[in-house]
Length: 310
Image (tube, rainbow, N blue to C red):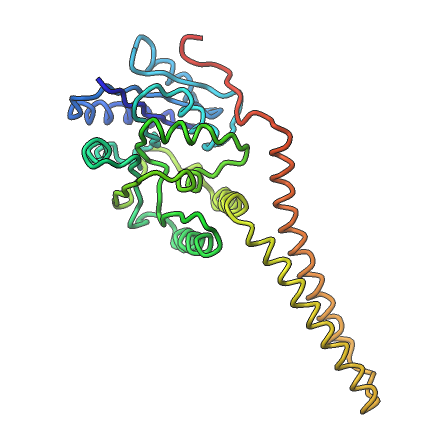
């Protein structure tokens, strides 16, 4: 029977694990033609998540766990799970049940019967989220799609079901700075999207603060477009032209009207403005330089402290 590997990244999800397993088992009874294995990845949790994983996986042939030495982030956890998966198909799901396991049968049908290589999910509503967070998310997708050749679907979740060929392609991308939503689109393959309404967590609180999401969005922009570098260059060119025009204007004003004395306010405002533009450009360059620095060090994306059977 074909095997479906379900990768479950976990960070402080002790209260949701049992509920997640029960729901997957319930849905698994409707998938009679496939076996399911659960691979839990503990991303340096501090609330007893690892102990809960040990208890759940003890004596269970279809359940395994991997535990990191510290918190390396969800991207690292997903990569570790994909590397450890053995199934003909693999899916990434959150333990908080915001990724409905009830969609798995429909996703399997699309892969097996409709010929798709990958089935992704996207939220069509953001009910329950703060309005400012929803607005920023929408603006991010519009912005990155306008400057990047890799188009990312608005509302796309990490919840995807993939054939082994897609999994192998993603694992082969060994970059340190990972942005899975972009990597999934970059590798290509024929993808079907399934829409669903936002589902709130069954327990606990989200680990994604506004600033973590902002940092993650910068990761995506830097990783999938060099447009900001071009923007910095264009800004520099534009202001060089403006500066040259200002010099010509001042020289002509002096020659024609002998009015070289002017207020200091305009001068200070101009200096501050141009300094701000320079710092912005340096910051953009610094982001790309920092990512390059992290890549060339070739550190591992994650370190495994413990796993099932070790």
